[in-house]
Image (tube, rainbow, N blue to C red; front, side, top):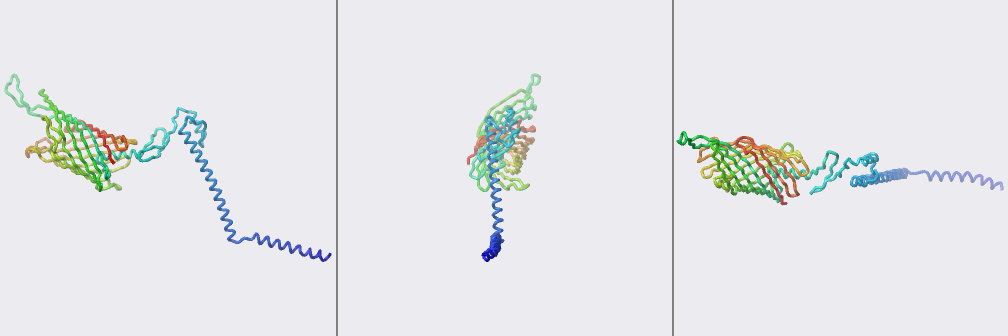
Length: 405
């Protein structure tokens, strides 16, 4: 009995030692196991952060959806739904204040987003760009893309008043012998021109141009001696055929450069019912035009020279000119144009001899507006004021370019 107790007493320390060694063996970890445990802990933290972010995103989406519903239907919004309840409460308490407008604008080519605020309006940049480009195309500063045709019917009115001295024969009661004197004669012309223009885009950045006018002119002459005559004349004008080519593209300070060459066939009527019309003489005209864009503004300048040929002993003088213009896209579908032109015409020739004093120099101030009516139709109006004794008093043009793609 005593031996068994002694044996049991010896076994207890041995058992305790074995249990301690086993626990140390279980708690001891290798370096690989430690790295794996750290990675698992980091992954768990990342999952928790991702879940928190996802929850926050869902909350924000709900707030945005509620805010959109309030903006779209302000009359039925019964409680503030945005993250700023105080501001929403003020907005509901002041119904006289206009609600904010939706910040989306639709265009034919797509949609664009713009901010709205009191005193501001939404601008469809694509539509404004389209109005600007159509005005530039109509002005000849931009060419059509290949396989595109533009047909432009137009009507123009021009008022001209010219005063000059003409010989007149008079007789009086005291001097029955006819006497030749110089009398001042005022000539007034009302010129109406119906015109059809055709432009066709060609490969290699070029464009074919065709024009056919019809002229109706009412002319009257009044002298200081009291004599007055008036007459009307009409007829087909000269057919013009031209070719335009983009020479260089805008890059940095360098502008677009366009060259244009047109030929007037001189097939129109020169006179009708003793009224001088606006055609009948062949002419070759060359033009160079430079375009620089700073959207929504565009600036262009041109210089031209026209060589005119003689017919039946009469040769109108050659003509040259310079022009400066700017175009502004003022609204989503409207552009405004401002320009100035300087024209110089040489002396006329009659049977090879120059007619002294027949040269002309004058300026023109041009104002215009273009409005996009539809995807392929534009309304263009232009108004000109003459500067100088030889200039037309004023002129007005309305045209309707129609694009065929």
